[in-house]
Each structure stands twice: as structure tokens, then as C-alpha cells.
Length: 305
Image (tube, rainbow, N blue to C red):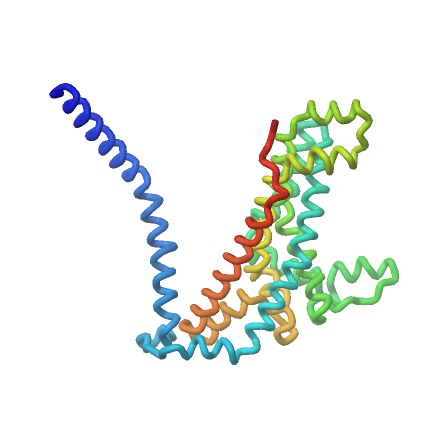
């Protein structure tokens, strides 16, 4: 019995040491998570019930910030604009990313593949502020390169940044140039994991390229595609750079996104309490959309056998 008890104590000490070691290794990540996620979230919840403008101390204002939500029509206008961006940009990114990945996947020369991947991915590394001036000039109605080029085909000058309709098209073009390289790379990596022998067997059985793609390739890259769709949807709901840089949210509020309205409320109007309520609304919207996507993920196949 004494021997068994000694062994049991030694095992408990070993488990405690392992647990302590695990927490020590996790402590830097946990500390960063607490400082940059949990603590700011607590502050947001606190300010939701206060009136605060940085200059004066925060004052308790009951539920006035929440009451204002129901009276503020700009919330629903900007939220609808954000969903417009989702509807317009997400399908475009998915289609172009898949087409580019399939095209690059057929290239046999490794140097050419490396060059094409670098060219497509490079715009994602650039800071938006560094290319803002260039794209504003490209979309200029009177002096823009794009209108100059379209003029060769007899197309009248298009008010890219002055029309509420064309501003969305301009945002789509800019977003495609800026972000498609990232999603292309994800899908391209997913294509690299597709079993070539299965495709060769299907080809021997007489399967056409379209049949191979929809019956074999697409199901096998569905986990990658699912990840791309979730990150893309969240990014589009939170879209800020494109409308802020190209149009400033105008004309009026016609292209102003919900994230841009939160920024304006907090850092322009200095109404941080109300901005925190809007930010929490954004968090709930993103959470609901993500949960809905996970709930409807029956089409994703994780079976590689």
C-alpha cells in the first residue's frame, strides 16, 4: 500500500508540474488576450451606460444611449449600406479567387507560379493610406486614368466617386485589387491538397473538367472555401477603408458603412458612450452571421478518404 500511495503522490505532483508548465507557456498569450480583448470589452460595456467625451469624466446616463438607437435613422441607413457591400463584394471575391487559383494551379513552371502569386498577393501588403491618393486619381471624373481609358471605347465620363451608384462599383474594383490576392492564396493552397490521383481516375472515366470541379475539387476544398467565406463576410460587414478613402461615405450617407458611422460617432462627434453601443451592435451582428454560417455548413466536407 505504501508503494502505491508513493506512486500516486508522484503522479499527482507530476500532473501539477505539467499543469503549471502549461499555464506558464500560455500566460503570455492569455495576458495579451486579457489586455487587448477582455479589458477593452469591459470598458465598452461600462461606457454603454455613460456619457463620455474624453474631456470630462464619464457620467451615468441610464439607458439614453440605447433609446437613441431607436431614434437614429442613420444607423439603419449605414447598416443597410454595409449589407450592400457584403452582397456586392463577397460573391465577386469568391468567384475571382477561385478562377485565379484554378488558373495558377494549371501552371507547370514553378518560377512562373511564384511570380504570379507574388503579383497577386503584393497589394494586400500595401497600407491602404499609401495607395489612397493613386486610386482617388484613377477614379477622378475629369482627370482619372480609368475614364481616359474608357474614352477610347466611346464611353462617357463616369462619376465614379460622385454618384451613389457608381461609388459602389468603384469600391468593388478597389476591394478586388486590394484583397483578392489573400483569398486567392487560401484557395490555391487548398487546391494543392486535392488528391491528383482522384482527378486522374475521374478523367480516365471520361469526366469533363466541369464535372471534376463540382464533384471532386469543390467538395475537397470546401473547408478552405468555408474559412474564406467566413473571414470575407466578417471583413465586408466591417468594411471601412474603401468608403472612407474613396468617397468619405458620400454623397450624403449613401455609401457610408456602419463601421464608418461608429468611427464618426466616436472620434469626430466625441460621443464615446453611444459609439460603444453601436460597436456592441456590430459585435452581435458579426456573431449572429458567423453562427448562421456554421449552422448552414452541412455542405462542407471534411472527409478526405
